[in-house]
Image (cartoon, rainbow over all chains, first blue to last red; front, side, top):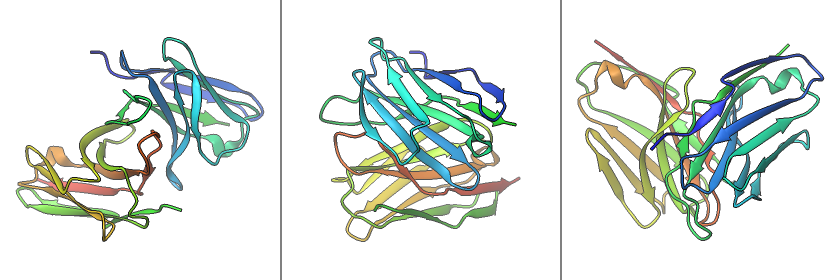
Length: 115
Length: 113
């Protein structure tokens, strides 16, 4: 099976712009979670989608949003970029049945740099 | 609020040594605990997952233990190799209907030839 894929791998934006990141989960996986990783804060949970519905949300401002499509692919959007949004954004997929979770498989990440 | 701590933050050992990485969590009401490995600038690779009802899991040279009541987990690496050099992260899930992982800050391991 193909692993979790994320596009693009690298992105450079300027303050005030918006950005959309994409994640394709492992075939058959229905849960997709997004994380932000920075040297100072480590790995922080952004949100999780399951069957096109946001199931959990972390403590991030409303500028961070996401969605999931019927094929389980997910996108996250960050509007009005700030310098502090520079980070490695990771997505993870799992089978994520409605009542249980399993090992999470991570993609390679998207490195976002905000200038 | 669940908090996960990993000690030490960094560790350097000579090749061949056995070593232990520590992870502690403040709320013992976890669903499972995972250990991950991360190479510089890369994504995470899952190493071991321990359900809350289990005490340990083994995979090759790796053994992870879980003591839920004391809020602790350890990752034991036997006969370390230079290829084991990476950052090791532990993460907990609080319930069965969430994919939300709460991570520790990681332990960066260097194994010297």
